[in-house]
Length: 131
Length: 167
Image (tube, rainbow over all chains, first blue to last red):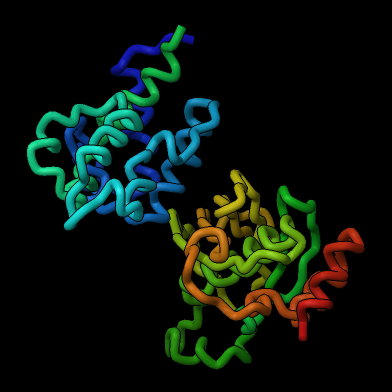
């Protein structure tokens, strides 16, 4: 079942309003889940559960939030920044996210900024409208 | 969760839904202060009652082998006061359950009247906080809960493990 990006965005926005208790005008495409919308780790699971219901599909957490798993590997992280290898790994894991800005200074604290509303919409878009 | 705040379960469908009841009495001392001359059940204690109802439902779904803790109150909306003499009925339903967590929707009714809508998330902490040390024994589910389940039929394996974990 094909869906337009606007339709997907609206559903994602409703999910985030319910999961994070935010107002609809706070949920913009560029908003970051942690920085702008105040999400904490348990909220990521809540968001996954609600997306699964809203879009009637399995949403593996590591697919939606793939950067979470990189942070503990010394080959991928050095001095608080992603290494070349880490960056390559991140690119492979988040094909739906634009990493141009992040790559200039791959500070892992800024990884949180990659979790945007748009990243979720991109992910769902790729899943729903694939093939 | 050793403090028991519900009276008993009246319905229990393993892994799906459970209904518990609580009788509210003026013998509960906090009602004398909440509020003087106007005793009403604090909303936070309605959430606690739902958390116990739902927590046991979630725990039983994994045969009480996981340590289940309340991780998030996603929603709590209240529509009326609950007063001494009321019997409230707490219905919890598992919306999603995975190896690491569970999402719950709940409703509280007094007779046919909707009193509250509550959504909760529970975490299976051994699955979520890898590397942190918790006691081996299951400190969440103890034998104290068996009396709550006296009126509902559970399969033997689950009630057996609950007793075994009581220490």
